[in-house]
Amino acid sequence: MAAMKPARRRAAAASAIAAEARGAGLLLACTDAAGHVSVEQVAQRFGMSKSQLAETIGLAPETLYRPARTLAPKSQARATEMLEILGRVVAWAGGEKQAMAWYRAEPLPAFGGRTAESLVKEGRAASVRDYLDHVATGGFA
Image 1: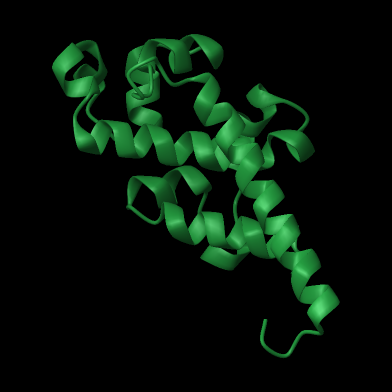
Image 2 (image 1 turned 45 degrees about the horizontal axis):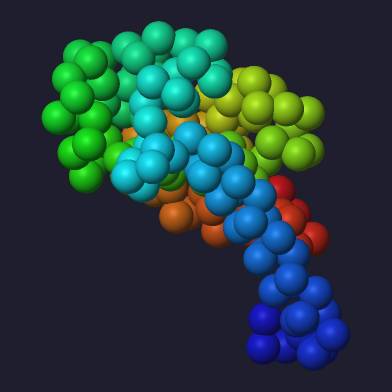
């Protein structure tokens, strides 16, 4: 970004902020009053069971059926990461369910054809978010 002209730098920053805001919207919609991601609401919103949601975010299927474990830091972090990524792509994917299909099945060339889902399961959600920011600011996929 240092080699960019100031106007281009501001545009790139504004685009990244807009992408962040889109990601936050879906996350906020699935957060309860206590500030936790509601796994019940996420599962219902995307038409899946808690077991399917757990598999999608890389947790054991029974994890999201135990209230105490849904609030565990790892469960909350994985659900948050998934929602942030989905929120960033929902506009160009054509909707939330299409964004979930992209998340689960679309190979990302920059990651050797791996999906966003597989990368989040490995703890590489930040890399996916950075990639999406790069694409949103006009970079190549």
